[in-house]
Image (cartoon, rainbow, N blue to C red; front, side, top):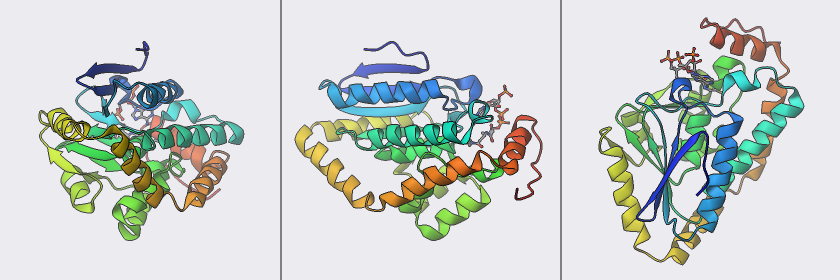
Length: 260
Ligand code: COA
């Protein structure tokens, strides 16, 4: 097994548990986390001892509160494009894993955190889970697939509402919307993931891989939307509104947007 800086990992009974471990930053996805998820999913693809995966976040408050805002605040458009395209590549790799991947959502799953949960095959939400795509508050659009996957899970009407209002939805509402498979108490969340994975991994690894590939193929027909998202995310980085939105977040004040 690889020694990771930002991920805690364990492999027990065929279940590979990945814990994103930056609790003081609410497990925000910096480049190091994305690179390590990339390497971890190379392992998932290649290591036959891994039969199923759980992704969760460290600490009591957050699964992942988004991409690390401090890291891309002064990016050039070229760097923004590379960031978004790289995130898409890694999240597509997670979605294409030939073994079942479950997000155990133990708190905030916002922005890149919601996008990470959505590229997993299933989501089990602890009762304190909160989902949302609040990028619009930063003068930004989602950049890791959120404009596409959210609508595929919860439909066009509610999906557009959440993208445009930045509203959060709690675990029970997310369950009703079809974003979440099950809601559990905090303590039952990981055992529930393990019990689902144990049921699946008693079945044929070949057939599991085939079903995931066929299911992904059904939902990945509109690839253009993902490319458009990368283009539009890149454009945001050069705007005054993005500078204002991210500065306001870091200064803990409300942003004043001008449309420039
Ligand atoms: N990127 C970088 N740092 C982040 C972060 C992110 N996406 N989300 C939270 N943090 C940091 C905060 O800056 C803070 O750091 P500090 O202690 O050094 O000031 C720490 O994590 C705790 O967050 P804080 O905002 O103080 O917690 P809170 O309980 O008041 O609010 C949230 C929790 C999740 C509502 C709030 O952190 C938030 O809105 N985060 C950003 C969500 C977002 O816009 N995600 C999309 C990013 S593209």
